[in-house]
Amino acid sequence: MTLRIKVLLVALTASASGCTSTAPIYVEPPAPILIRPETTVLILKSLRASERQRLRVFLDRTSSGRRDALHLLIWGSSRLSAEVVHQARQMGIDTDNIHLLDQHDGGAVQVEATVYHARPPACPSYSGPLLSDKSFEEPLGCSTRRNLAAMVNDPRDLIDNKAVKPSDGERAAIPVATYRTFGAGKGQ
Image (cartoon, rainbow, N blue to C red):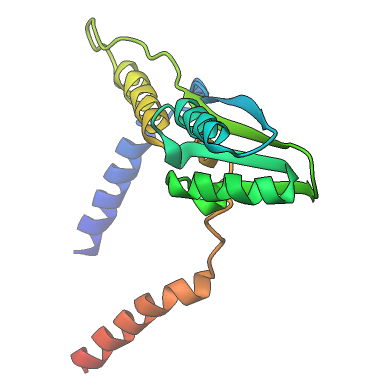
């Protein structure tokens, strides 16, 4: 019986050694997703009804219907800034996307609205014969990156997402350890 196992191991080792190759494999780096900010500035001297309407139209046009992706930097008069923040919140712009800078009394207020656009890579076509696995993986990976760039709310998250904090690995492993000890107790 042990002779049969030894022969099997020798046969497996010999067949596996023929499948390995020491030749280097070149893998093309994936095409990057480029992120481009688009910034527009509005200066308001007061917030009468006409100026308030001008602000609302400015925010609506700048966001292009994506108010959740609009980021505001507001500086100038603290009274006017508070009114701009109030109008922006009423329009559905998230509080985390509104930042106040250099507040003072009197004068005008400057509103800088930024929307980030992800420019996905141009993907090669699937057309033509699929000669190897690589010819399929390249367009598939590219199309995945292209779809991700189209779906993401804030393209800056593709570079570095500060909203997600690092987690504790030991705490995450507690359910696995509990499951293993629960299963070990049943078998005894």
